[in-house]
Image 1 (cartoon, rainbow, N blue to C red):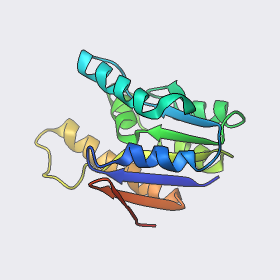
Image 2: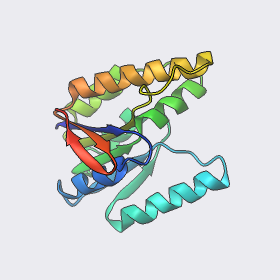
Image 3: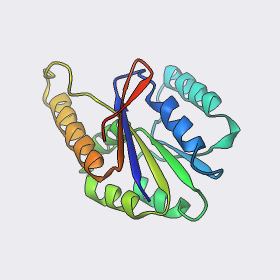
Image 4: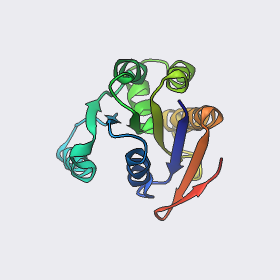
Length: 166
């Protein structure tokens, strides 16, 4: 099934657009959340996102193994929103693992699920001053390029407005 990639800056409307798209592609909808609760502010953010999704999405929380979730859910869901790739990348880096983009993206591309991937664009700003931040920025750029190459549709969100890039 096709991959759809939705990218943009923080608070640009990426997640809302992804949810709207998912609602157009079947009644069995999943939301794969990569966020982890480390403090009260993040707990509040997650609760707000859950409220925005409402009851018409099955929420699966998985910070690291996206491929496993796609495989496990491919018979039970029509569409899955994976939000977000850059947070997943951060989780992988901080866990000490080496990110394996191709493995996850190949499984998503071959799955019968429509996979809507949400990602942040982090390369439009200044070059970060520390090595970890530069590594993250570079890996995020590579991940986004590889996801876009496999996607049949790519959207860039600006001020809540989607622009179809591919």
